Length: 341
Image (cartoon, rainbow, N blue to C red):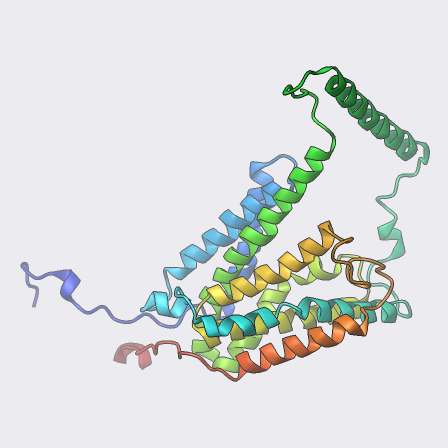
């Protein structure tokens, strides 16, 4: 009977079904990637690192935030919006050397690709090469002349200024430094957070509820690999590198999912993914300080055993500890009778 003085807020709302389903999780993955790309193209005429970062934050983050609203109650516990015990920190940090193991697998696949046909025809790779050999040489010479002129002007003005005065001509190193800052902000500060929340906050809890722990972890790892494998191996990679890269990214996605389930917190996979990218970025910008053959220097070589064996031992121990700690179970979803029928 309708009670005009009743309070709708006091009525118990029926629980929501598990979300997302496997099909919906696939749509969320494609939708987030497409939204990030479209935003970067629409907002910027020439998409650069900053544009891609804004697209990632608005596209992936927006899709994840909208999808999180459909997660059943209690949402904070299911999404992993909580901290984790400091005792997990050594295990999580030991997973970061996985980047060296994945890189060495890519090195072996590269050697195997030398004996296999390429997935991309050689004609397609040469389409972008200029036919006139004079244009690149003149453009390079012109660019070098501009840089030399800017450096000369900066030096001359600096010599003419008195103490405490600063030249108005900027050195040519500043744009390069700014590009590195942009890369660091996007790859370390934005991508791990929004992608971690989407895959290991929203998608993982739904797939585990629908498919079970193991199958939910595997499918989440596959979806995670879909948007990372091309960035890992490149579009011109051979079949062995593509296959090895796909398997490696699935394994890394499963490892990050295990971190989420073991700790009960989405911050754990975000921290480990940030460590992955942080090591790669540091190796890129400081090869003299952090030189690893086959990883960031002497790329045709293989990673020495002095690096590979400790990386295998540390990451193996971390994975074993994380995998054997089941952590808090996801809150059960009790369906109403009409939904169960």
